[in-house]
Image (cartoon, rainbow, N blue to C red):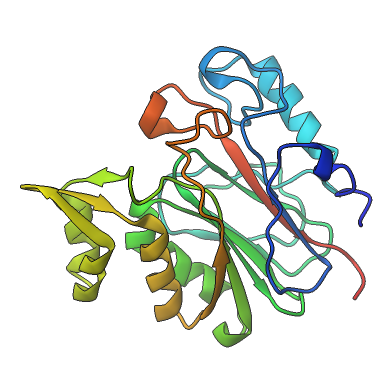
Length: 253
């Protein structure tokens, strides 16, 4: 196992199981293993609300598992994608990133929205997207696939922990954002009462990936809202920390 990843087994991080080249490295942090307190306890990676010194220390702890500083994004629940050729400390505004460079970690932060990893099977290109309902409906996954500049059939996707289909209560705005474009997307919504549904965000992500030509899709069934011991959840807690989804390419075969 790569030196940067060797002690992840001793942490509460999630490493994807997916059929891509071994040089593709990826993991998702949980809320455990840091120094933050209160609603941000303990491995909060997002500034704002929490003590800056605690977030800095938490990021330093995660950095031990990475080959270089990651390119943090200023996420706005949109569909812009950043093509990263080298580590970028400027925190560009985007909700997804791709790279073909070695040892250039990408990251998105999450606290109910889905992290979606994408990689060519041979590891030549990788990407990650922050996919909440706004980003999904705006096309963040389709734009990430396009930014990778390879045949979609050569891509593998992995959908990480996010708010689950039994927890994501939505209104007409969310329902219409998907069904107005794709009437069959109504299958991802379970009616609750007038004007309210339970939305299946992973299913919606899979539909968008399939429409973009990505058919090899994997993931983990983990609901951030229903597991407070392991995950931050903005929908559950309001004041909430952020977890990180990291991916990069190692040099070599």
